[in-house]
Each structure stands twice: as structure tokens, then as C-alpha cells.
Image (cartoon, each protein chain N blue to C red):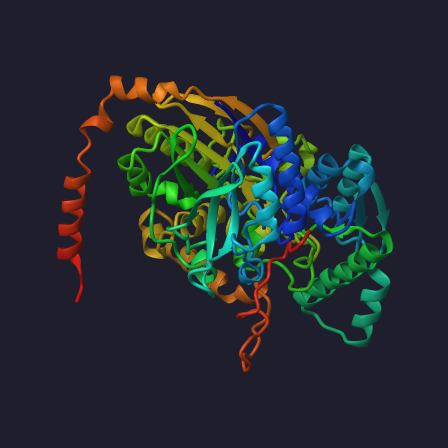
Length: 270
Length: 287
């Protein structure tokens, strides 16, 4: 699972450069939480296009992830990218004052979609393409909000597992405190991804790698020494989240239908 | 013989712009006194065509694009990739490679092995070619292959058995596999180089492989085009992932020298292979 970091950097910076141009933009925008993924993505973008062509939006909700905001500011300063802070608390509080809930997942999803909505608004204001920061681990188990943090123009890191993103971050020399801290989706104070998923990223990624990249059956992965319960749970998570990885199905009733047999490339004439 | 390798990134679905870039590269190669220029697979259209494939198909006998390239071929031999709508089979479109020389079409090869699994879906949009046939050029008997054809070693064998001293593969091969920390390129690039080395050595033939670069719908084309000598030695390899136009001197007299040193060609028995294959096919045929 180790990666050839220089090759990955070369490939992904080229991808960001070329796809940004093809989409008709010369700059990019991303939500910078101060976590590992958005930090690594910001480093790649700054390297691909130059820091002036990168706009980082820091969008905190109250004091939910103070450390994240500190780290995001640090990254924006180190990279000398443009950055802007937008507090999403007023709109989130207004909504949940009218429609209260105790469910932190509902709140987290709402926040993710508020950030998405701001990113798309700024994409249009600033004529900047949105970089997605979801990694392969999240995409496979569906650990992301549909039409929230999963929404983007291009996703440079979607084929790198979380532990590989960390390896890439080490290669790119991102701040040590971001490399070592526990990943969090910032759903509630003290929340960690690993606590919520119930597995460490090391273990999760190794199981996913065998299932997905090595095309092993769940039983083979269990035989390789992983706990049956964990493997089963991961397979279930993959199965249940396919809807987050696809365009919604269209009922086919004509002889030629979008998505079924009307098939054109994304990068058509670009 | 000087060979130009045009490791380009075609514009997807825009043959006019690609024709212009072909003519630019041809001009440069002519100035450099190259006698052959090779472009990648589907170089006139880009690779990930899907439903664009039939829309961009050309009939080589009628196409104005071909007319321009035929004119250009008076100065230098050309190999490039295009979508062919064959005059003899209207409605069927092929992923094809053309060899033009001195204003004439010397050969068109229709890709036989269409990858249709995983990230590939060529079988959905193209008809499959049905033969490998080497042909004579002014300098050397030549065989053409398109991308995946080269990874099925029977394809190169046909050219070897037919006496080709030059085997040219045009390619749009995406790079995959980042697990090897020491390599400069993707793991899959090594697969092509392995085949290049083996085919050149065991066919005592010059092997030319021109792969494209650039990104299409998330696929990353790996570049790393190469030429191997008839002794299986690497003559040149272009950079991975970067556009390039390289001029490479190839010594065709090495074909004869290699065939004297290693008489694989002299001792080959295609009729035995043919009879064996016939038997295998007859016996494994399912009614």
C-alpha cells in the first residue's frame, strides 16, 4: 500500500492543471478545514497552479473545531494561498432553531451542505473550479455527505486511501501537527472518524485494499487474519453507499436515454 | 533511419485541432529529416470517445483529413490513429492505424483486441478487426498494431512470421499502479516495456511503441514511448506523463545482423504453429 509519492505528486498536479484549464478556469477553490485531506489538497493545488490561483475557504461552525481553524490558518499562511473565513453559524442556527433536532448527524450533514452551497457560490463569484477533497477510504465506505462535502468539480485524491494521503502529506512536508492529529469530520466536539467508524484507518485501509484493489472475497480477507465482524461491516458499508458514488438512476423508457445509451465523455472537446 | 515519436495529448473529440497539431509535428519532423513519424492511438480524435466514435468516423478514401495527411506524406512516412468507417462495411467503425507514404495509403490496421473490462469499454463502441498483415514500405517490411494488440503476443508473432523487421504499436495506455516507490512511472508502463524487450529480441525486429499523454475523464495516459533494437536493447525511451517530440536514429541493418546471430526467424516453422493451432481450435470448439 506504500505509494510512489513523487509520481503521485506529478500525476495529480498535472491532473489539477489540465482539468482546471479544460473546465474553462484558471484558478481553484476548496474548503479548508485544517484536517489532513484538505491540507494535502491545498498543497497539491498550490504546487499545480501557484498560490495566487488557489482560494481556501475556512468555514467554521461556532467553536466546534477550533484546532481545525487554527491549522487551516496556518496552512493558508504557509502556502501563501488566498483565504477567506466565513462563519456558517448564523444560517445553521436559524435553521435548527425553527426545526430542532438532537441528531448530530443531521446537523453535520446540514453544515456540509451549507459549506457546499458557499463553495458553489464562490466558484461562480471567483470563477474558480471546486476541488473535492474526499479520499478513497471515505468514498468506498460512504463516509461523506451526498451533495455536501462529496460535491465538487474535480476530485484529485479520490483514488488515495486515507493512510496514503497521510504518506503523501509527509512527502509534501505539511505541518507535523496536522499529520499526527486524529482525523475528525467535526460533527460534535471531540468526535473522531475512527471512533465513529469503529476501526482505525490503518486497519480499514488494509481491509479495503484487499477487497477492492486485490479483488479478494470477504472470506479470503478474513482468512488473511482480519476480524470477521469488521470485514462484514466494511462490506456492508460499501454496499449501502453506492448511491453516494453515482448519478441517480434514470427510468429508461425511450430508445436513447441519458446515462444509459447517451454516452459522451466528460472532457469532450476541451 | 530517423524515426520521430510524437508523444502528444490529442484534444478529445476535435479532429480539426488534432489535424493541425499533426501537421505541425509533421513539419518539425520533416525539418529534422526524419523519414517516419509515429503518433499515438486515436491521435486524430482522442481516446475516450464513447458515442462520439461513430460521429467522428472517417472513410479514408473520401475524407478531406486524409487528403491533407496524404499530401503531407509525400515528405515523410506517417503512422497515426483514427476512427475508420470502412467503405467495404458501412455502419461498422474501427479503432484503426494508418500508414501513409509518398501520397499513398500503404496499410490500414483495424485493432483486433478491443479491451472491454474494468476501465475499458472499446467493445461497446468499436467493431473488431480480423487480421494482422505485414506490408512493404520503401525501407523495411512493417507490421502495425494498436495498443492492446501488442499485449497479445500472437499479434507480434503474425508480423514476425510474415517477415516484418519493424513492428509499430500506437497506443493510448493509461498508467495504473503507484505501489512501487522506486519506479519513475506507473507499474503498467513496465508491462509495455517488458513486451517491447521480448518482442524485439525474439522477433529480431525493431519495435516502436508510441503512447500518448494527457488526461481524459480521470484516466492518466502514461507516455513512456520507446524503441527497442532487434537485439532487444532499449534505443530510447521518452519521459513518462510529458508531451514530447523525439527524433531517434534506428539502424535497420541490425535486423539482418540480429537474424544471423540468433536465427529465430530462419528456424521458425509457422506451418507447424498453424497446424497446431488449427487442431487446438477444432478440438476446443463448442458445438
